[in-house]
Amino acid sequence: PTLRVTQGDVVRMTLTVPDGEATPHGNDMHASQVTAVPTFGAVQPGTSKTFCYIAEVPGVYKYHCSGVNVAAMDQHVLQGMYGIAIVDPIDGYSKLMVEKTQVNANGDVTRDRQFYSADALEFSLQYNQLYITDGNYDQTKMFGHQHTLTTVNGQALGYVPNEIHNLLNNGDVNKNIFVLQPWNSMDLHQYQSQLMFTPTGVHNRIFVENQGNEPVFFHIVGE
Image (cartoon, rainbow, N blue to C red):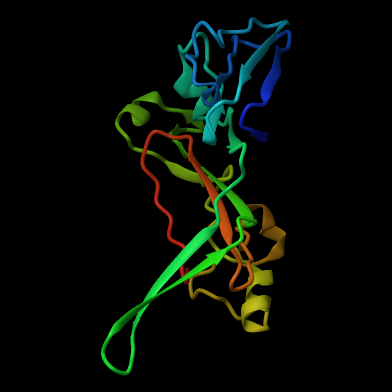
């Protein structure tokens, strides 16, 4: 889940590892600005531990399982044991300034600045890489940077629009946005992406976190 607090808030979290779990787990909370071990050390199966810190620095951070005092941490994180933490600045966000230039009839370059309210339509994107061989995590692939898939908000291969997008954009569920659109049917909705709708002229704020160990890139078309 996404954790969202304001700068200066006290964050308290209790981690319970159930009986029968094969390994201990920890919780490295990057927004705390402290080291994972011993602060967020391993919690043994059948026990609980409460972690507490003050969110002093605004920003976007990851939190994730720290394995057994950092040992095997990569295996836990790259199999989905992670989340995103947003620390909002105590004084709020700044206004958005949009600056444009244009050439007038006399050939002079003029500059226009517009300021938009700090209130924004917000989205969050969490990226991660998977390293899989025969359905299991493959550490050798991870060290070799040979990722199998990249996930966005926990979903792999979710880049293809579906019938709803076709209807909204083309007025016909069967008129594909892309020529190559194999997962069109709503019966396969669990594999499909969702559009981020935003009206024109609206301030947008996007929180981006990469949980994996490789760079990721994204492009907002039409910004």
